[in-house]
Image (cartoon, rainbow, N blue to C red):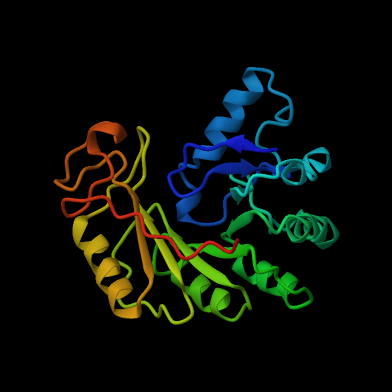
Length: 246
């Protein structure tokens, strides 16, 4: 039925595939890769291949076994639109999501073009939210334009890790933006003025703003634990979400 998640903006994770490969700077310190290797060392079922892309068809039916309406992050340990995941398999994932209208499914990718290619031939169910990662101007921002052209009830941006000032971004057709800094010993810093710019643009475009974390570097530019830096931005917790499709 999935795994309870510690990710602030979802409830459960569902991983019908695991493993991935790096394609842009946001992947450099991938938390999923570190976790997959740890789970492999522990002998955890499903991680025999470590972080090598692996299809997990035995997990496909998990959401169908849960009646309670739940928000699922799809493939927290992979990328559903990885080049090695066949469209036939992705279609099976979408079929399951369509068969579970009581749930909301959040699908996030760095491979926006492949997601758009797939979605040209399917109707995205109303309970499926589609999102792209936006870590910088060169690699991340262009994904927004690709996402905007896909028909979906909710389009969202995961602006994490935020690696630089994104400048002016077009939020037309975007309903939700998640912003966060990087965590871990090799984390790259996120500056408060970069977050300020995104927050202001979200307000102007009426986009729900969710501040996930500062990560390893605090608002004051000091390095400390993720927990110590916390989630407060400008004196409060920002956790807006678009209306659930339930």
